[in-house]
Amino acid sequence: MKRAVSVASVLMCVGFGFAYGEDLSKFLRPAEVPYPENNKPTAQRVELGKLLFFDVRLSKNNDISCATCHNPKTGWQDGVPLAVGDKGAVGSRNTPGILNAAYQMHQFWDGRAKSLEEQALGPIQADVEMNLSLDEALSRLNSIKGYVQLFENAYPGEGITKDTLAKAIASFERTIVSSDSPFDKYIKGDKNAISPEALKGWKVFSSEKGKCLNCHSGFNYTDGSFHNIGRHG
Image (cartoon, rainbow, N blue to C red; front, top):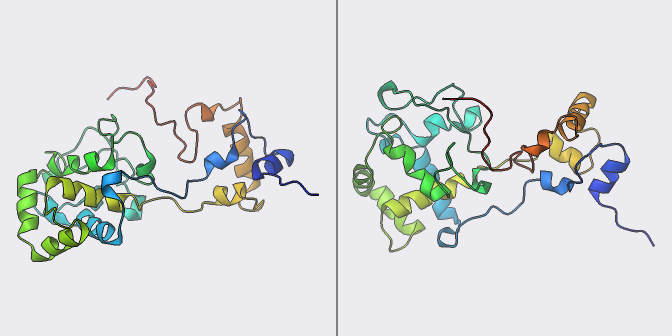
């Protein structure tokens, strides 16, 4: 009788060189995206969140949206050293990418938000970002009949509030997840998915020589924690 052999075992036998005794499946994104019980994803919530994410009317001068800094064309960030917001205001940090942010325990570079819902309202209000008060944002949305109906479809009876605004944007952000990369395909057994040079790089990355996995672990290549790397600013 044949025994089932795990992908991890096969790759290790053929010289994959994986160290630290990690399970290779940890490097594959979980199929299920986590969400809070009070904001279960639905098609209506995701569609509403997508519209809000790309809507410049959530900024003071109607010229900046969430997607201005989190641009899908540039990996869901903006590709510049420091974020640029209202009237050209320059922030103190660069824009983080939001790919797979749904799996993170902390949001923002300093981890001050614990959920996508909590994070979603920050950029709208920040004076160096979208610079719009929540009261004004809600007033604008409530004046648009289409949005009134879309919020009712997504959150029946709850209206347009700061909570439903945050939950809708978060629902869309939870759809921004990674697809199968060449490395994912390699882990699943496709030996030709990555180049010999990439394989050599992985062996260094995952070994005691590189020790990269000390911090860059799991499918998101992060331990979700904070480290002092000796830099300031």
